[in-house]
Length: 578
Image (cartoon, rainbow, N blue to C red; front, side, top):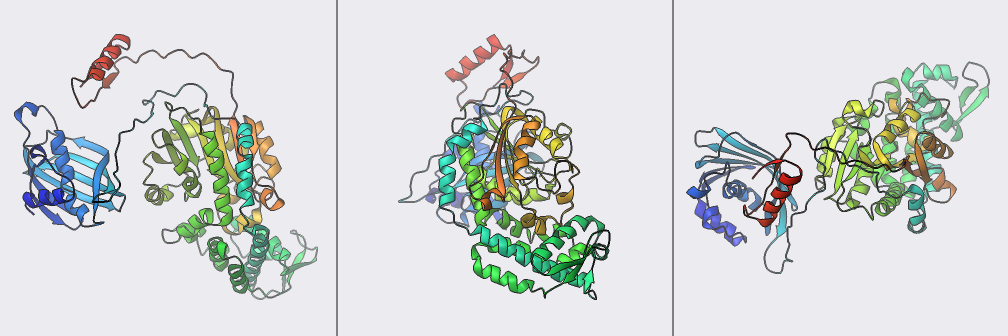
């Protein structure tokens, strides 16, 4: 494609480039990539630039043929560059290579390489983001504006206590909103719990019959001998569910594990699963996870199937994502959390970064509920999990939120050893992850230390093992607790959380679940404030020797630039460059 044709197409799309911005001479378009030749028309008086802005714009122009092939009537304007590396001054005559990484109606993502005619690379621009905007008659005018982000320099902490409200104040301020959410939410949860536990009892009984094919009666030693030792606690919980479903009964008290068991009925798990789906179609996402675990339960207990692969493989993890986001109860929990978070940040200062850490983020169910509320120009959000395997999917899912950083964090280890300093966050959020650690006291002390003075912990925690364990009790971490003097099961009781948080350095704790036994017994939304010490007078830190500021303005003779340079030189003694 000759450059004349390219610029004519751009003009028809609403982009009229002036003479100094028409540097492309020819373009060769391939599948998802473009190679373009350019000749820089920059006048001699601007030759001092390493990379003239007009030439950088030319590099972005070269992507136009790729963007014009999709989503007709849209224009894409640059908004961000992930990283820029320059090895040499951009040559006056050279080549531009553009590779398209992602494209939809809202965004485009590109990588660009600029080289000389001999192929020697002069610069690379990686992660160039462009935003799609509507064009043509009748379209609403869109305006792109620059927004300054509050961000401390590296090594310079944000001083002073976190200005978030106290949990008790948040509870009082959101009581009406939470009551309205519950009033308009009839998800028949209590009825579903009864039927899903009955269905699990049938899956369990069918599994036990497969593990002990010739047995009419058995004791726990017989059963445990057929499963991997690490699943012993899980097998005991499932045994109780089968008994409560009326499919097993105890017949005598012999043996170290107590009474022997007898099969008392025929397990029909698929029939019960179908009945559950017909009665509760709104809960099909949750039922899909229970059914997937139930159909593979025998192989999991024997060690022939890896439950992590079963639920979190790339092809299957959408089941768990839906479990945590698309069921009526998950949506209600998310709305409760959103109501509290919205009130918490309602009066957040406009000149202070909001530093948020999510621990055990996993598939991002809790993240998806909270991110839309956070101010993009102020928020620094660190999305963590013990496994980086969750990150590629999360990065794609939350690509619109460019303030999110992804990194691994093991709650069983000192966060400082993993690069997270003490007091570095205003808010820590956690959804059904705190209990999945060996020692809750140690976990809460480590989590609290990550919070600034007065910072908040926002945590969802479940209390009913028989709802979570049939699926997530298949993982070793669910049964990893060693603090048996505190809890006899992996999930701490509702009553135990408030006193434990107070014991671990949180001075104001509120527990905000709905009213009614089915709400209270199922989960809690916990909001706890790290102990707020007495205010202290902080002295201004001394200037760092050798610190250098770079001041960037559109006009080198800008009055604001001159005033800022003068102030820095007189008060901070900084060196500066333009």
